[in-house]
Image (cartoon, rainbow over all chains, first blue to last red; front, side, top):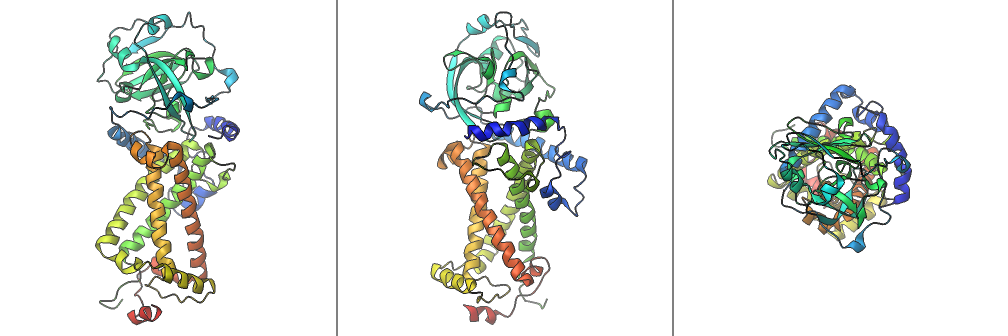
Length: 248
Length: 209
């Protein structure tokens, strides 16, 4: 990927945060040329149609998702350096969390809701992977993460594995959610380590989700709470219009 | 139209042509906005020339219009093969003929016979169909590089598929530029793509061949 141009482009994406609608500011010339003479210039109608198509695409992606298909893995020599920082805020504002007092809160359809400390999480079985992180913006980068297989964790805490959604809340006010099938995928990790060391703040300290079958924004960083639910939880970007499933 | 006469463009071709034109426009213009979110190369497409307003909007357009493109494309391809439309109009694809017709076209000496394609047209139409297929396949690989990993691997994994997708887009845009320029030069070709018009007498076609 082109780091320079990526950085240059982060700012417009940041500005786009304000946009709560697909088209509020979106009727560029391209759209006007296309829609001139049609009834689609009504923002609400277009938004509804695009929203319906996005939910249809959620279903198609869930059907395409093969719970046993593994994302390609790479040798460590393929790791992208430097691995890009990406968030809806600049790197200097990445939260610095006191790892000693940090606790992972659990709620929803989980039998044992006792909070977890980092030391307790580190006692669970570990797995590591070198996989490709693909951003919704198009760029990709290869990284190495290690942590607790999410399935192991969900089973350990007695999560209702038939519930459709797992939601995440984060210390940077980010939030997201994934489907249970992806949560149980063998490569989905509660990542604690970046390469051989504890996750640094820029990569999501102290805990991030690493799901190589999802786009990057479905891999929340700085997780503070996990919940299992039957009700669609949405997400920070998802609520603004990004496709919810966003699987790879 | 006289009974038994063949229209210049059959109804299915006219309908699928315009649905395809709309779908391709949506795909390209929204694709340009997606490109701008993280440009593969050192330039950006001016935002006024794109569709979707921001990355999320452009993605929503792209992943909605893809169904129109593929669904319409399947109808068109099935019709083309089953009805014999492709066999009648796209063959033979002979390089010698292409050279001859291209030379004539560049000297503006190539006659246009409604309802019959010259060799350059045949090659151009078959090529753009292949480019659209390449765009769809590379798009699938970019969209689902894990689920369709075999497809992505053929193109050099995710990053390779991105480049194939971009190259296919460039080829399609190149076709559109020439296609629209030729329609502007020979405007009588536009109406038969909208309304039913009978093709000229068959012998006019044979004189050209």
